[in-house]
Image 1: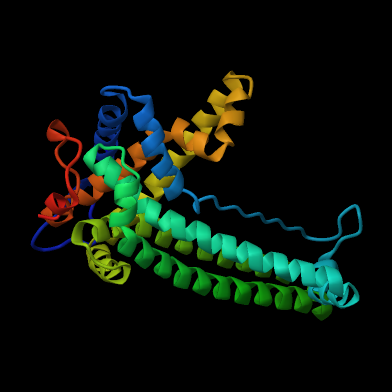
Image 2: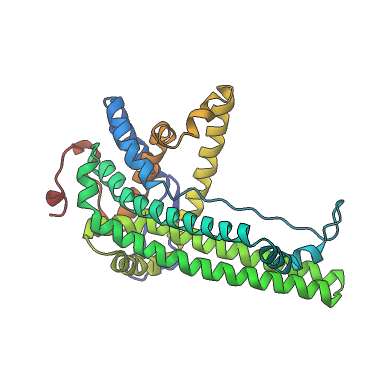
Length: 332
């Protein structure tokens, strides 16, 4: 059994939290929900809520670096002078600039819509997993307040992250300009560049943990207690402060599992001569195909949270797992 001892030892209680048990239980719960018995219509119904829940979870990024001039003559000066070059291009191509700005507003609106749908979908998918049922319209209506609360929280958090990221980009270009014009020795440039890269990585890790905690723990607390995102964060932060080590390792554990799942998906896709990749890139169909993964991960987080006491128990016992439990009964 994979367990982790508490980092901050409490003189009253010492907890022994498992990571393998929630995974094993989550896998068993997934098999009962999706394969006992197998119902294709149920897969498509739950898969739709999983699709909604994961709409805004596709994140991407890139990065790179260099220590001098490339074969095409691009050096630090090209990077440092990019803002001025881009601004001059905008001034010289006003029609294209207007079109780009309009496109940015459209993308921003679509991002808001996707996050709004995804926020409601988080609770719809959670409810179906908890109660082993395949409903769409009922949880869509029931969790309007919860979804809107998460959406507003994500909006504020996203704007804060955007502001921080923009400030970091500004610092980066200012830093590159100083390196370019300051004629610093090579021995001073490398540590400075490494420091900037570590700053970006720290920001990405912190924001990633916050998103993970929101979806894996704060949303379930909202679901159980029928409270807003802000109040649920307050409850979770109290728990986090007492058991920080456990949740830190949990993030690493989920990251490792995600890497393993990605490797397995790539392997399966290659074994089908890449035909499997074609189905996976179709958003809704891909969600249905990967439903066992989604249900297992959703159950895993709930099983892990339950280990911190009866106040965090959300899942019914797997032996008594039934369908159709009402929203009112769940909160009693």
